[in-house]
Amino acid sequence: MGCNSCGTGHSGGCKGGSCGSGCNRLEVFDWLADLPVADNRDRCKVIEVSFNQGSRKDFFRNESGLQIYKGDMVAVEGVNGFDVGQVSLSGELVRLQLKKRKKSETDPEMKRVLRIASDVDLSKWKETKAREKEVLIRSRAIAREFKLDMKLSEVEIQADARKATFFYIADERVDFRELIKVYASEFKVKVEMRQIGARQEAGKIGGIGTSGRELCCSTWLTEFKSVNTNAARYQNLSINQTKLSGQCGRLKCCLNYELDTYLDALQYFPEHADVLETAKGKAYLVKKDIFRNLMWYSTSESTKYYPLSIETVKEIQEQNKMGIRPETFETVEIVSGKPKEMEPEYIDVVGQISLRSLERTSRKRRAKDREKITATASDKQNSRQQGRHKPQGNSRPKNQQGQKNRHKPKGNRPGDK
Image 1 (cartoon, rainbow, N blue to C red):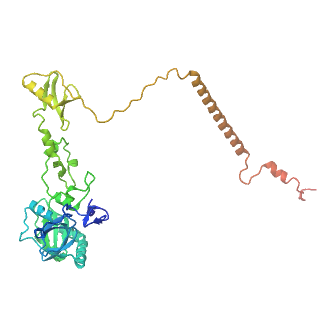
Image 2 (image 1 turned 180 degrees about the vertical axis):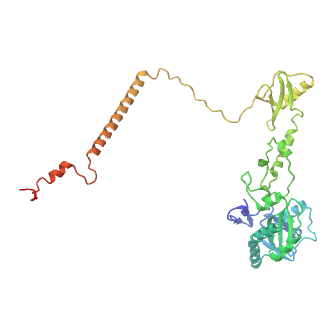
């Protein structure tokens, strides 16, 4: 997974100038790096440099003959200044990439490598990268003030802070001439507006797909081919827009990955086989099991599905053309790959248990229940008696109060003689 979409934003570690944790998008493996070059004069003088964590790549000419290897940070020519990027590929594999993109090593428009990035270049580059998020938030607020029907996805600032590229998506053409003037005066840079598609935006932002892995467009996919619903129909997928759409809101690019395999397999299936005529009525095609070479049919009289092989369907079609209606289907037995569950064996235990043993256990249970009932009743009665004789508060029984004052001498009272 790329570090641009993880929580920390740092890679797990690099070895030999090649990151093994995937911290750079569109990573390239140089499988010719350990092989010696036969002739240094024939060595490719063009290198591939990636910017903004691999979201953008370009070719630069190494005219100075610098010893540059994959993973090095270099300063290259920019618009009225310089930019800093990471070398993603060097050597003979660059020629293959140039040939793939139909570019030449002697292209006069190809920019040059200035130097290996110094500490000053790297510090300035880090400052501009830290500023990109703030510029993106402010630029979105300005675009809302102009009420433009567009969405800013990303901002990329050159290392020397002289140029800024704003990537946006829009359904229609947008007149942003006044917006460019405001951006130039606000951020003090040369502004370039670049329109991208929804799939390219998803690749720049990144994310996790339904497969549980990082999006293909943010890791390795660079060419976006058109995807239509026919790709889902050929693969017998339900036309559910929610399940078939990716994070970009378009149909998933992976629908095209296995399409050729399905098309090759469908060549052996008979055409115009939606309805078959039998003696019991018409049979209608329900689905096709492409990799088992089976076609499932159902009749109007029964809800059962009948799996038929391709050869059986072709034979029935030939019979229907001759006016013959078969009596029954020669269905195919479906063999499941799952192991069968072992059914428990039935054991006859009649006669092994006597009625006397059951009566004994029931008597013991009844006796235990009676003992419990009597014990609880006696406990309740004792608690009631204790509560009846217990004095409440500071009060004492009357007989005890009289006994306490019985032996005291009586004093002289006015009525006594």
